[in-house]
Length: 216
Image 1 (cartoon, rainbow, N blue to C red):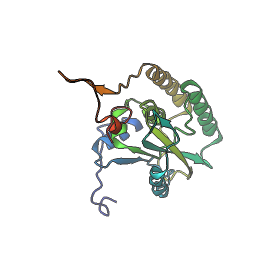
Image 2: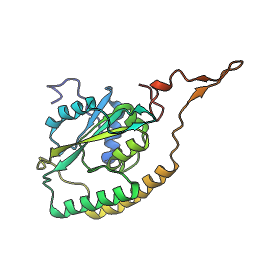
Image 3: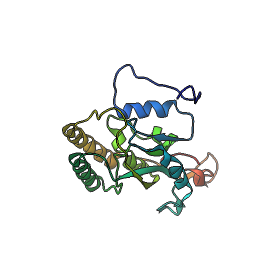
């Protein structure tokens, strides 16, 4: 594939660090404005990527402070999943608990196929297991997200590195960490500036500044 696409780069860790570390490494090395995350086992169909980009042109679901929020994440929802009934039952319970604790309306946070603004992704907290909480982290930072449905495929290669017990224990640990963050997170915004020997003036960049301090 690297022969066919010379711009591709292969990045390797010195030892196995997990999925979250992998996507952070890839996003850090990327140069584009938008990045796509996908599992490497073939279950995520790349043919949905153009549809994900098409969602960026759609109007946002919400408005905040009379300004349209910028759509920064397109999350995919797996339908017709090929996983075992036990794994699907675990996923259903995990999503229900996450939505109840974090008041998050994301349907399927565990789907690996995501389109996200690179600057926003690099700004949200990075920790082991954070790939399961990307949608809620994007929302906490004041940005809009949307979802599209995708048909899940059979695994082409590899095998899952997680057991359901590991997912449950580690997921609960991270869940309460994100809950703590949601209660303590501070994202200050500037409404006006005051210069010496002058009266207060409205910040000229106010209308160009997004939640979280990003400029459009």
